[in-house]
Image (cartoon, rainbow, N blue to C red; front, side):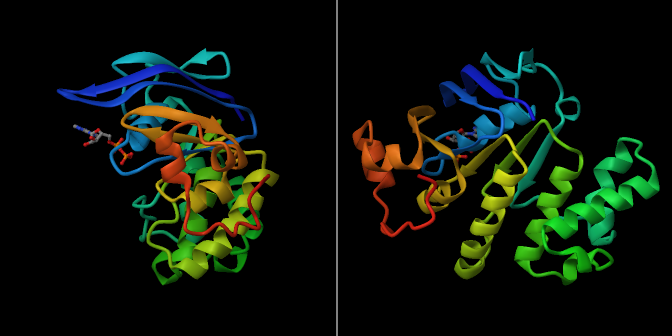
Length: 246
Ligand code: ADP
């Protein structure tokens, strides 16, 4: 996978400055969380990395390649969005294999690769099911399998756990967190949920009003907040974080 570099990325919509000079590097194999309240610019930042938005200023690079003006379909990004619904006219396997089909991969290879990923995510036996018959958590795993099937250069996750119940979230956090580490995925993980960011991410970029206030490991932002805002935002009501990666 590729290293992601954002250099002074700025995005303005009319009077609104959604992203105000964000610089951030996500190293190869690292998951960096973008954490902050609603409206602070997380999704816009993610969308500039995906290529759905062109920054008003600044650059986005994957490894040494400047992709700022490269269209999304040529960036090889895997996307997991909360609202990124599965195709309900296809089986689970068909969903996972879809991106490979679009890339001209032959049927037997598609089937094999989709099957492997589904097995890895613990839903191999659901390959022939209609995705609408799966639970929310299972659907989310299919979404992840679909995103990973194309062997993306980077994985972008936007509030992927939203809409799932607390118990399932907790389980998926462990499982998916381990999986992302195991697969050596380079990813940006957008969330407004402090605990989720702490548990899923190697480092966290805390955003406020279009800017990054602090980037650090979960422990650093929690124990040594750089600003008042970070201190308040990261002061969770759940200080019991046994799984935090620190
Ligand atoms: P977050 O993901 O942190 O909730 P967003 O990136 O969605 O924040 O939004 C940041 C700011 O940019 C908000 O004030 C939002 O209203 C504004 N914004 C986002 N997208 C657009 C758009 N397409 N047109 C105008 N304003 C937008």
